[in-house]
Length: 324
Image (cartoon, rainbow, N blue to C red):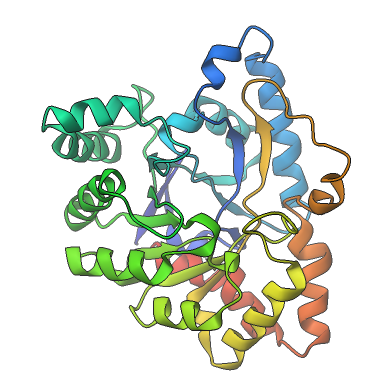
């Protein structure tokens, strides 16, 4: 049995069922910790909110969710475990860090100057993978990596290299963030050059670009890609769902259903104060919910002639193979 770590412990990878590869139950941009006087941290309230989100997904038949929240962006495995225990939803959490522009960079930049950062990042990954996160015993099922728009900075490369080292020793899955859909081919090629197993790599947010040649170059490295921001559209770096579906149809037409994941990248509960969305932006995120694919995208794909077999491949079979 090939097992994947969930927040409730190991699970047979072939029993993951219908899976969303990229959703955030709880997320906060670094700095939220300084706004907690007005941003509540009440555990029971946050748990109830998380349970509501889990039930929404389960109503669509979802059995497993990968929550790739980076370490510095409010990852809380105690909350994730509580939600999973109450609902039965399988949740796979991450170890890893966000890209340089929006991550909590001063800590490791300081250590980078001392010459110790990359080794310490590797040690952190191995400790969490082997023994668990922050004394909880909960182990991550993926390493989260991220790069900037149009570049992978040297700061970010430290995490990529350390992650490949950890994957070589443990076989853990690597899942990435591409900023506005850029650097997908470069991420894949750098990871493979470092010795990563491409069958254990998911390049995320590839639906940020509508240039299908970028998807094909990335797939040519043997990795998976995620079209994982459905519902978030109209803002910078977020094409319309219609444009995303055009690319997806092109990929499916070339037989890549066995290399594509679907998801939304929703943030369901914010750390710090809830953001107030300006009225002009509200239409752009009105469908940014973790059931949007099932309610609106899949019916449209079926109307366009996509067979159930290909949909099942993307939403169910690929996850079992990835984590096996």
